[in-house]
Length: 239
Image 1 (spheres, rainbow, N blue to C red):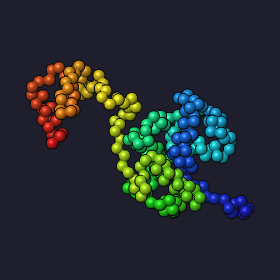
Image 2: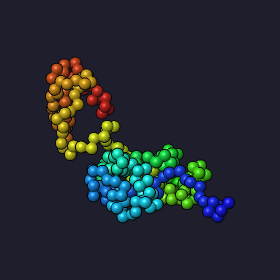
Image 3: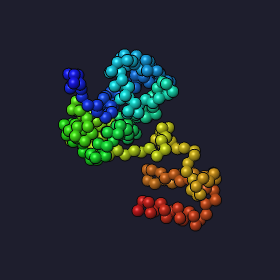
Image 4: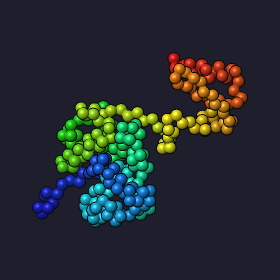
């Protein structure tokens, strides 16, 4: 057996080698250069200032793809919708934190760790030890992965100084709508009361409540009995 074979490290499972903040910075450079358009591997490498045939480039490309910040576009790449959500949201916003946490959970190893550590992330040494013993990481890769995970959670704003994992309230609907209304703005296409899928035009009334107001949309043909049912539902909600 040759000396090279004796010192060869076992191959560790794939995880990003760069934290989420560093990956966002890389993709922001790409977005500045190419916007929503496609870019090739050589163009990607040139924008990041590395050789397209180097090991560091392969590691950075892998990290961007594992976090889902770029996606394939034929033989090229383009920035992902997830990147756009984070890039257009404030760091303190629920939208940013929720999307960042989803990006961190995208690599299987990180997702499995966070399913195990629901409320608190152990120290880097403890996480690295778990990766070595249970996930078959070599020591160097385990230490790097533990650092990347912790740094990424801090960047996402979901890890406090005591390593408690903070809950994130995602205010967005299940079907992503990135075109949110500004405060005080209302949409013309408001939900209607009645049968699902009804196309009946709705009337709109504003009811003053102190220094606030409640906006109600209701169909033209709403009966008195139906109005009483609506009132009972509203009373039950706030009771």
